[in-house]
Every structure is written in C-alpha cells, then in structure tokens.
Image (cartoon, rainbow, N blue to C red; front, side, top):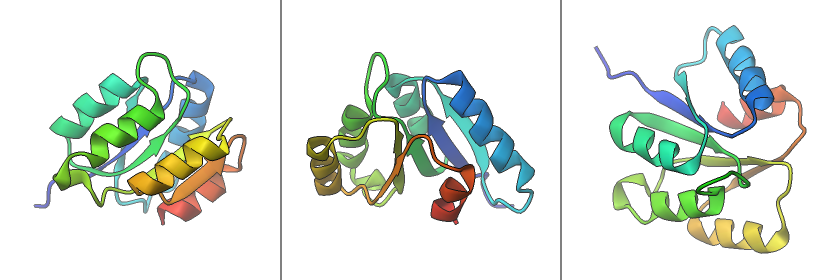
Length: 122
C-alpha cells in the first residue's frame, strides 16, 4: 500500500482554514489528505515528518512568514520540486519576484473562490 500523501495548508486565519478544508474534503476524489499548520515553524516540522505532496502557504503569519518558509523549503534539495501555492491577502511585487526566484509558480490573491485553488491543485 502506498504511503499517504498530504496537502499542507499553512495559514493563521481560522476562517480560511475551515473554508479550504470543507472544499477539499467535499471533493471525495482528491488524492491527498489535508494537513493544517498555523505558522511557519509548524509547517517546517510537518514537512519533515510527513509525505507532503504540495503546500498552500500564506505569506503574512506570526512567527515565521511564508517567504522565510519558502526559502527554508527550497534550500533543501529533497524539496526543490515541491509545489508551493502562495495564498495571501497581500502579495507585493518585491515578494513575488523573490518567490519566483525561489521557484514558486502559483499565486492566489485572497479572497478568491475555492474552485480556483482546487483548479491549481489539480
């Protein structure tokens, strides 16, 4: 039996997390299980202890923000190709340029319809 894969959702907004979970769990054919982290440190811990297939990551969080999380992830060769979707209410052009250099390819400006996230994940 193959090892369970996870979609790591990293955000400190409870309302957003509940909305994403509801949408993903309603899509019964989705191949990965959601895993929630409320800050960057927790996300990195989960990443090192679970089989994460993709990450939905907020930029602005307490403790360790999304840009720092991306740098930490992509500094490790085993995570170089891990898909990261930035999901944020505020994405400035400087952050976007830095994230593109790191390898991030998907940006979603909050608020957005959850179908848009599902489309990016599929």
